[in-house]
Length: 543
Image 1 (tube, rainbow, N blue to C red):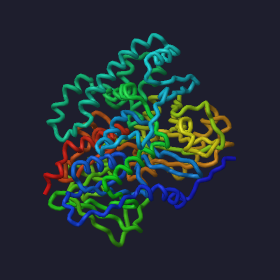
Image 2: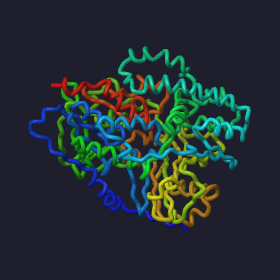
Image 3: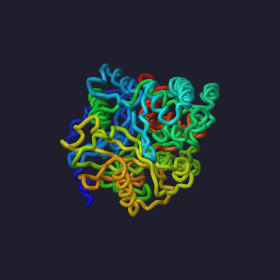
Image 4: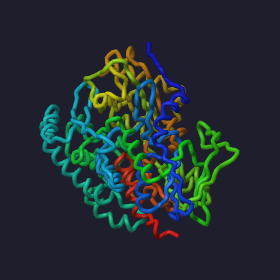
């Protein structure tokens, strides 16, 4: 029988208290501190990076975090001696993180240890065939030859196209704020050179013929919330990012990076207030001037953003930076009369990314044959993606990303044990799935699939278990429709067509994170903080 040791919420809060104690840096500002004040809503990667950059530019910064600890989607769960990264586990373009330490005159390597993966991840197809994906050209050609050596020349051509997209789309445009249509006009030649109107899958199919290899080289947009058959081929840049800078994992988990960033902020005197949920962004004369917080006993409806509070605290600021889901922010934190661009109708008409079903579990034995990162793909590819993105239908089959961090770092589990999470892309809440009823059935199906494929006798060895669904993304992370990555990164929802880093509606309001430009994924979120600097005034110029 499955052993389930799901701890109570208050127990998990206690397990985080030690971390929070070391994180908090409530430095008292001198009364004569004349620096302009920036409030940052959300302590995810985007919020932490923005706070560091703003502080370096002369702002007095305070971060407001709804949860009891930092990280946002990169929150860390501690349960029964196991450590679970809640969200991102793959680090590419680590130089974007290193820049933050350099801004503070420090070295990231003194705070965080990254280990490069080799291979990056193993892909297991429905028929049992496997493909080890890496940045080594010779090794990749050998892997391709296992399926069809005729596709090797096509692989080289695909990588050339990916390199072009990395240069044009990431290096030249990643930190451009796309503040208006002038920025779009300047970028049109690059979009044309990338043939950005084509889908990623069509680009892959142009060069790769074997059907399974087409899957292996096109699933990557799912890592940032996009359907490979719909998103622009510009996202082939992910291949080049990985090949150029590698795929890394942090010792101690991604949470170790979050902890290091918070330590940087401590040194800068930046305050982080946890358990501080924002009720509304305050606007006067068309300009954001601060926020109103919910009182400590505020409650949130399971299906809406209705809140109950008897009193609320107001905080004043010169600017407000949101590392929150943009759609949720505009719809629920800003009164309709202040939104000429992001009206409710526009928000509702957006096409949103898929949801995520994540099962975290620990075992009392080790599975040394399972690598750190593994993809287990079902037979249906396009059909399953249609179910998820277009039909909003929860299918019986699924594809999985299986994360086993103990393959690299045994410290995230008790001795002799393994830590896992299995992530399945699922429809967002437009599917009307009754997750409280469906969750255990879906989890059990994943368990049985893993047991029959790569984790022998799994059901006999599970000692701790935890599940999150799109409903949790909505209720806990305030993600609109429970989408894992905000608006889907379609061409018509990218760059100038994505929520701007500087609000189109409200002066003094700025957006960073997965749901704004340039998009999701750790590199994209960190680049949004760089884009912020392009549209924000230096503090010394503000009066």
